[in-house]
Amino acid sequence: MSEVGHARNLQNFQSLISFVTGYGSVYKPSNAQIELAQLTAAFSLADTAMDDVTVKLGISKTSINSRQNVFAPLQTTVARSVNYYASTGAAENSIADVKSLKRKIDGKRASPKPVDDPNTPENEADAAHSAAQTSYTQRVEHLDNIIAIYQGDPLYIPNEADLTIAALQALST
Figure 1 (cartoon, helix red, strand yellow):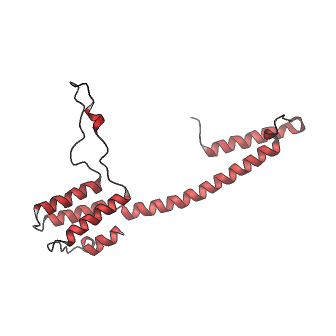
Figure 2: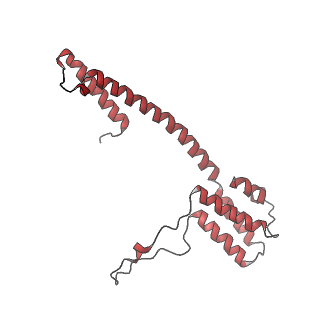
Figure 3: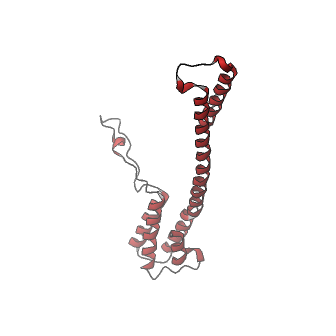
């Protein structure tokens, strides 16, 4: 299996420079851009750029991992809060609204995707579009909407500390 990627390209470029260096004074290209000094300078720039990408990737991965860790308990916490809310005797339409928002946080559809009917010339499945609303921004928005519903209902008074409105608001920020 062959290796590919920028690091491998740099390694191959360095091998080329080593090969050209081995020629010594015999290597005299007519194109100035492929002279040994130019190749060495290009390699140095590429190596520096690769190091810069590595540093920036590490910083980026750290922030991505932090965000994932913050959002990791969201689905479970929301599910628990919705289940609690459903047990309070709240109005059915309020419970349905909260369940709908939970479904959006979970990235699930309200109705299944249409399936192609082989007896028709059209492909009904092509008419379907993504229903996912699972970006971090959308998840926070859905959580804020759930919190607003809970705030408007005096029945939402959970005993669990992580399900209180204050705890959910902290999760939202």
